[in-house]
Image 1 (cartoon, helix red, strand yellow):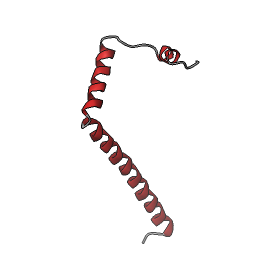
Image 2: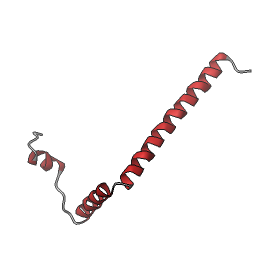
Image 3: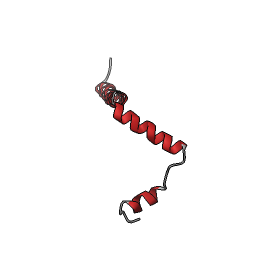
Image 4: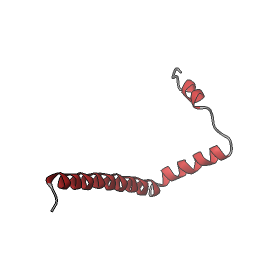
Length: 70
């Protein structure tokens, strides 16, 4: 027979497992939304091509270009 403490521990483990599953489901949904958005996919592909071709700037330079102080 389970004690109250054991039952509470099992309940807490179950709740934490459900929270983690919820996070994974949300992540999968977000991934599917991105995969189904042609504009976003095209922008990602362009960005990866820019990186591959060396068309990048330092983050600090980006901040300066857009008026942020570092």
